Length: 187
Image 1 (spheres, rainbow, N blue to C red):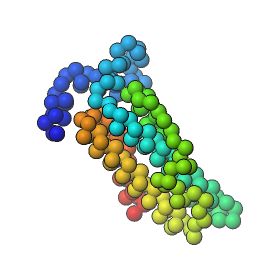
Image 2 (spheres, rainbow, N blue to C red):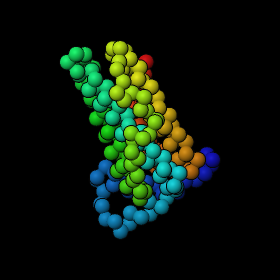
Image 3 (cartoon, rainbow, N blue to C red):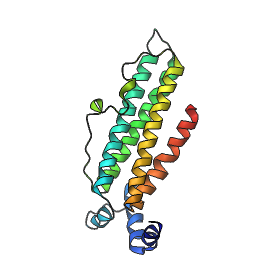
């Protein structure tokens, strides 16, 4: 597999397309749709597209769960306002991650499909839970981050299996490093 990746990396046409794609993601490129089709066709498989959609749902579910934790901690009977603010910030971060994946899916020419995340049992054990303090909330947050991290690793592995270095680079540089930092923070 490494030899196929090496061949892809050495191909100047693909390098040019990758650069054009990342430039368009950052909003710095010329957004003519005339030549954008070539980047969409490069090694973007249905498997990767489906996992991107799953990741969007996971990120939205994590955002929802952090919002639930924040709401619980900010209740006047609980009064852990600093913790509530932290989890509200985390909720916004997870929602932003979902938006980044939505943008990525659209830029690659995939179809965004957002599951009803409340029917998705990936992370929902936190919803409407009463905590015995901040440690319980942080423990649930750590477990959520581990689920998100594992999903990112799975997405990256499928992208690697399909020689989709664009997705591999996008996931690694935009999400995995941050995810590892968050898990270390919670531990």
